[in-house]
Length: 131
Image 1 (cartoon, rainbow, N blue to C red):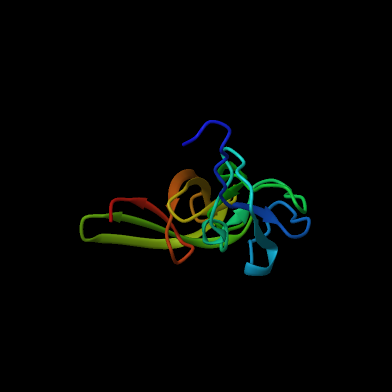
Image 2 (spheres, helix red, strand yellow):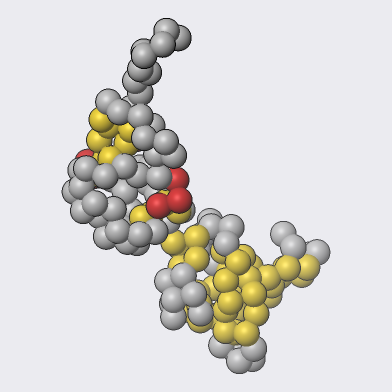
């Protein structure tokens, strides 16, 4: 690259103010011809994810600003599943935190009143034990 030459690329920016915990839609992002270190470069990297913080119009979106969307909300009654080998036990639980697929959250077993740590699965259930 010649001295003084500048490389151009694209940066993903918010088209409007997006509140934290909102899922990013295609109309929420745009690309601008600019290189901003650490910012996303493709809209597809943001669409379908959840804003972890408020995102402001015209400002670049960084990977740390986004997370997988939550499948479980705090205080939601959810299926609580215990698996060990061929044994599967299902009951109701109360989520003590929000959680997205693959995330570990604490859940109150409503039958025994015991708090357990479980992993959120794709169906929105909390699973304790191995699959």
